[in-house]
Amino acid sequence: MSHLMQIMTSSEDLTWATPQEWYNYLNLEFKFTLDPCSTNQNAKCFRHFTQEDDGLAQSWAEERVFMNPPYGREIPKWMKKAYEEARDNGALVVCLIPARVPESVSRNSASVSISFFGTILRLLRAAS
Image (cartoon, rainbow, N blue to C red; front, side, top):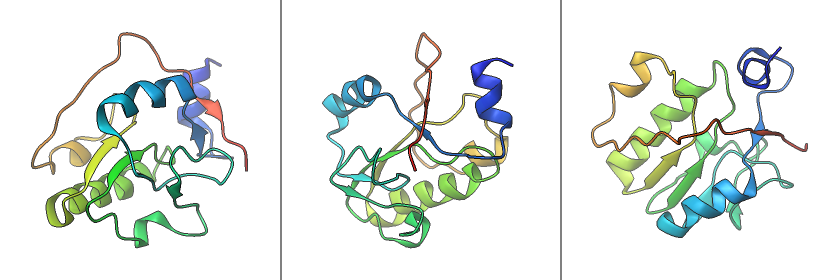
């Protein structure tokens, strides 16, 4: 099974760490202040939320958010949160999600900038 298919279809663990060089590249432009979907081992920002903290229940107001959500059925919940925080609380949210997302996820966005990288991003198994 290809690495991408393994990520998209595995139900044993939905967390995948972002390679540091990809984060560094994005951080040059966006200067992130919050990683709401991390473990303590793979957090990209000093301020971060783990599964125990429940990033969906926390405020992201005025933050510059790097979001690599748990993949699978969890993505729509995280996209809804990202949309609401940007719309209602002034958060800037950059989402690292699969290019093929459900229409219901993308049609709710008030202001969206979509970028596709010219290569497939190889995600890393997240440390627990």
